[in-house]
Structure formats: C-alpha cells, structure tokens
Amino acid sequence: MRVLFVVLLAAALGACAPMPSKVDTGSKTVGERMVLKPDVAWNELPGGTPAHVWTMEGLPIDQLFIYSGIKDGEAIDPAGNSSNAKHFRFRSSMQADEVASLFEGLLTRNGSTFELTKLEPASFGGGKGFRFEYTLIRKADNVPLSGLGFAAVNGGQLFAVVYNAPRMTFFPRYEARVEQLAQSARILPAPAAPVAAAAASQAARDSQLGRGPPCATPMECNSRGVGR
Image (tube, rainbow, N blue to C red; front, side, top):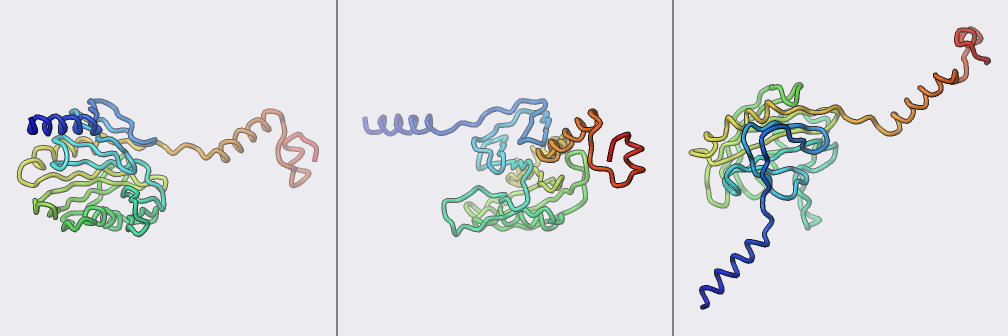
C-alpha cells in the first residue's frame, strides 16, 4: 500500500510539472526580431527569458539556447534570487571573442570546464556573424559535451543559437540539425523608434500642407514658395 502511495504521489507531482511544447517545422518567430525555420520538430521548454530553450532528447541530455534581441547591458543568464549572483551582461561594443567568453562564463558558472576550440566569421541571421565550437566537461556527472554556436550583433542587440550535447552519441546525431537551424535564421529590421517615427510623420504632414521649418534665407523662402 505504501509503495502504491509513493507511485501515485510521484505521478501527481510529475503531472504538475510544466511540460515542453512541440515546435513544428516551418517558420517560427522567436522574440520580436528573429525567424527560424527548423526542418525537424523540436521541444521548447517553458520560460523563454532571457533565452528560449529547445531540446531534442530532453534535459539534461541536449539543449539549444536561442537569444533574440538581447540589448546592451542585459544579462544572458536568468535573474537569480540572490542579489550577489554574478550576471553575464552583453555589451553592444563586444567583439566575437568577447561574446564567446560571455557564453563561457554562462556555461561554467556551475563549475563545469569549458574550452573554446574554434572561432571564425560566419553568416548568421542574413548578415555578418560568427561561429564557434567548444567542449564542456559537465561538473555534475563529468560527462564530456561538445558545443556549437552562431551569433551576430545587429542594431546593437545580440542574436545567437548555442547548442551542446554529450560528445559520443547525441552531438553527432544533431549537429547537422543545428547547422540547418542556424543557416535558416533571419534577423528582422529593428522597429523605428516612436519619437523618430512621430517626427517623420509630422514632417510628411507639414510637407503636404506646405508647412515646414522657418526659412534660413529669403532665397530659400522663394524656392519653397512660402513667406519667411
């Protein structure tokens, strides 16, 4: 009877846990400015702040971090409960090696061991970016992982996909899928700032009504056909 109670309790607790949602093939908008087009289905974990987390096999086997529009000064790690926790903040002036180091800090904050094995220019999001490879020895179980990442800074914001999985079986199985996903990425133009858009709209209305800023010279007034 006690064993049955434990089994039922475990099932009830499992039922209360948030379940991943399926990410179908085809275009998928992530955040406000990035579109991905996976050619196979993935699973997305709940949360999505600051990174959307996808997986093929489930955690902790493999994980894909997707960052869409991290702004200058924002952290790439989730906000912790401790005010003393170190955060890894993106700066829009960062170069490729500095962004890679940012992810090294994120992935080693639990004591895991990281080694960057390749860093090279690459197209990402429809423009210039970079690609990096790394190895990670996970502290919790000493499992060696292989990792792959693509990133770009666009409009002062960071866009990236970063994947890792056990080196022996799962990383080779899904490496090509991650490459395909990264190559499918498209970064959308940043929306116009509200103030600038309003000013442009007002200028267009003034132009239609023959209004505009005061003339600097009589010649300018004559050319515009308005009184000074």
